[in-house]
Length: 59
Image (cartoon, rainbow, N blue to C red):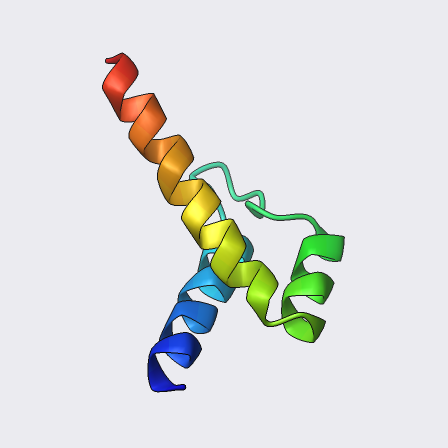
C-alpha cells in the first residue's frame, strides 16, 4: 500500500505540475479523474515514462 501511495503521489505531481511555459501538464478533467480514480495517475505515470523514453531514443 505504501508503494502504491508513492506512485499515486508521483502521478498526481506529474499531472498537476506546470511545464516551463507555466501551463499545467494535465487538463482539469485529468486532475479530477486522478483524485477519484487512484489507478489513473499510476497508469498516466507509466505512459509518460514510456513517451519520454521514446522521445529520448529519437535524438
